[in-house]
Image (cartoon, rainbow, N blue to C red; front, top):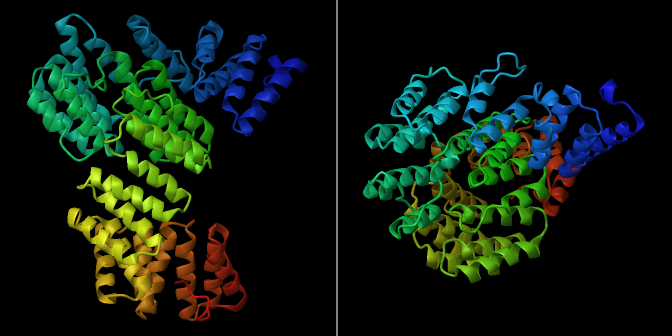
Length: 532
């Protein structure tokens, strides 16, 4: 703790804040850090730490109090400075925002984000030449920029706001091609821009596809209702950028900023619901399940993204063991919108968590009646039927799913591996798995299936090579390491086999697998303890 704050009372607050952080009580940690600052310990290091804690907890009231202290505001960390910038944009104080971007004396630079913010502020001007200059400045940004991936995405939004649909079209095509899991939200935002500019057919074209969120957006658009996902103000553009950046940073395993950026996006534009969904997923990855559940619950029912938020919330509740709450949410939504996509699938998910497989399969069958063209529902029902002991029904469902999605690796692999386990149509099983592997060569589960096919068919050298690769792709999956150990033992590499089985034993959860691995570690591979 900084020396200036080392009185006994302040030390208690500091230790309490640190303890709360350690046990995952982010709200208490933020509160105690704020009390520590309020007690007079207003040195830059502690202020920056308090701000970081408040942002991570979503305590924007505390963050705003800290930001109001001119001594602390001068020396904030990156997340604190991004929060300050978001506050100026939220309150439409654009001169203050531009001044923040130009602060050369600040210890943390905002240069990486400045061109985007300046472009959005320029677009908010009522002067045509300022709007034109804003677009030109962003379009001229070097493609070596750290945020290169988002240039086309934001230029498309800006051109739509300017009413230049032709300039927007190629940019949004590039943006959608690189959107990853954000494609539906982007499509809806762009569609709203086209509709406002008078191109309704162009808007509807963007909303084509089986995604239930797009279907709901299309229905709203046809009914003349707003979609609510187009960024129109600088605060919205800033929130969209930070949310996308949080996803990108998480992909490269940055563990310090993604949640903070999603939280700052929420603070800057409270109506930007995608930030809450992304932030919740990131919190769950950081093992903050209660915070994740609370955050995703903030998405309002009227948002087009509410079904996505509800699915996420139910899955988080299931992972947390709060089964009754998950089922109540699923059933309440069925009462509210009995014919909407996903209402029965959510109930099926809860039954699957309870391992009530027949009930789960029946719920998925009801969902299939609502969505007869969605292969994922056939797949979920097939898995449940298989677990319930009805392989014939499961196989038929898998073939129906494959008729809808003939090049979907997960389907090819599941059917192939299921046949492999049963010794059924082995040539066909191997062909299905090989097709899945060709489509998704870096998928560890599919690679494991291919290696296990080699093993089952007596090709031990190939089995060891492929299963070893699967184990490297996913070091934590018990099934893969057990398979690898069996192949090694059968090849005479008994010492390596025991290492593989020990690795499997560390992450194994199923009682039958644990018992089988213990037996192998004691006796080696026998006819009785081989993996199925």
